[in-house]
Image 1 (cartoon, rainbow, N blue to C red):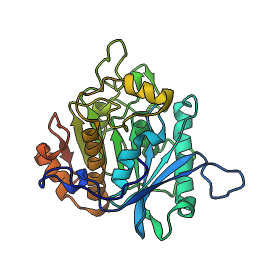
Image 2: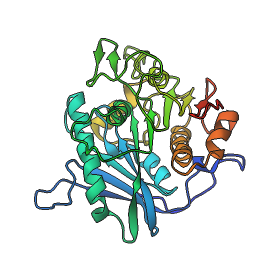
Image 3: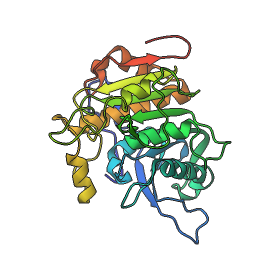
Image 4: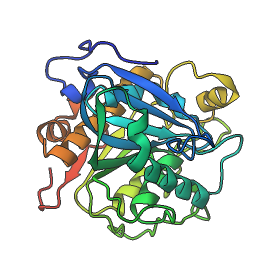
Length: 324
């Protein structure tokens, strides 16, 4: 899916607008490292941006273990159509790097985006440097948390973040085989974060897929990440979906084939899961950046408005002490 040209209404009138495609047309801009281009990124990136003139917040999106950044095209275009510039780096080639290397590479990409993203945006589109958020899926979710927690040695310390969203984040294969850096402490509310955090989980992520082990194992998945967050924090679990169900359909190549069969997958339409994930990201960014609380609170109070079944009941604990 290269771009979004319109915004069809997919759900009922009661559905929050965040779950629907936004009103802005979008485009995807691949940018590769080039030795003779001072504005080129340190890693290949795909920029997904509105094409309508304006100034938009920046969202860094980190892919999952061994996956490709273009596997997330539908979700990234969904979010961009609501007025955000997505920057999705490719942090691995043939083999994934060590965990700390990946986190440091993520920091380098963030530094690049803060200075040189503007050189690669559509005409009359500008990045709002005041608002930068972190989003990641699977191992990329853990990478996003690690960056926010200060583990990226390369990151310019003057850069701050407005929100953090982990989509089925995973910190390893078991408690004794965790990826570096080890950020989970197994102590409630131990993450030293002063920004709003949302954690999205899947009901099938912790389950075996025949002989294949869980892709989001217990003690290393969304549940533990959420426990270790402090308010303001939110938690949403798509009960009937698996770890890879937010990816695009018909993924190409061997990596695409493996992404489709490695994990326990749901039996419902993946498009519903993509709408769910894109919608949660959009609603939570509205909440965190602009103080627009109505949509995220509606989802928490009435989970039936979601295109994917949310179970257990979603949570939103605000720093003000309000528990929705």
